[in-house]
Length: 109
Image (tube, rainbow, N blue to C red):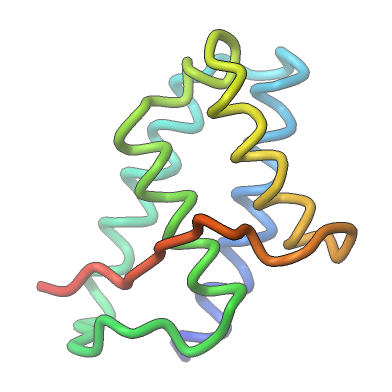
């Protein structure tokens, strides 16, 4: 699978999971499992370059790392985290600008 297609597919899924957690449509642990699955699938691609190829990919990896660090339960309890997530998803949806504090790098084996 091409890396760009992988990222684009996962951005759509990540947006959907985040919205569902915020709207209480799914339990937050489903988002945590999604992040774990993304990481598992990523390792199968055997990517050796840690530099994202686009701003969208950089924001994607930033979100993946932030959700891994804070846990998706923080979407319900941490206003700063909620704001950061909203800024990133707005960027994905072309209704916001690039997040100023975004530091997203590809994980490598």
